[in-house]
Image (cartoon, rainbow, N blue to C red; front, side, top):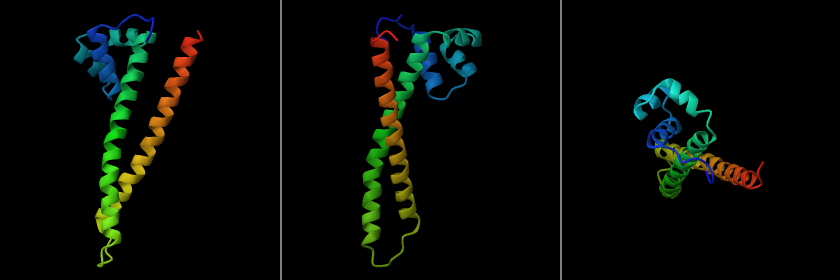
Length: 127
């Protein structure tokens, strides 16, 4: 948000609320403003950029957490692979689900990072 007006505390609060899934009405209540104010702020580039930045941060945090769980999932898969019972069961399905979600979120984070980089370059170029 280089060169743009800095957001107020209320705007930051509303932007974070919207980025984490709150409705406009809930974001307005949390920020102590009206729904109309939220709609007006949504027309401000600095405000929408803040929402995107908060969303990107949330996605990166989720990615880090899923990466940690992926290691646990691999441990479960390895244990089941060497289990002489031959029963895969729920633990293996859960581990595979975590691995799949981790892959999908990794791809989403990579895409978000690429888009953020492109947006920054466009902004620096004045486009």
